[in-house]
Length: 148
Image (tube, rainbow, N blue to C red):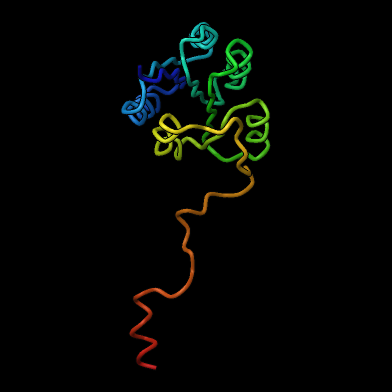
């Protein structure tokens, strides 16, 4: 049986992109707002809740609290457009994983396929340095060293 995911995103384009990003690992149902997602979130038919933090008058954390109070085994991922350390800590304290929307597009498949730890222990103040230049000598520097 495939994993079932409830994805809550008010922007139709972003909803389609995220649905496509996780479609190989799970069956993803999308909802555009809090009110349409609430009955699905508390029904217990989903193993994952992936929600935008900004849901107009509501907040994605409201869905996390509702989901986890009804079904504590559901894994939750909350994402935003930009990094906010205080919100990230609040999301982690609620029992969910925090992610940036741009990174979630690439990471969603990994979240859905892997065995997640019970809580998100990552430091929200530390930036993701995997794409950063690591220093040291590069191959292009070698001819300059040999010439000197």
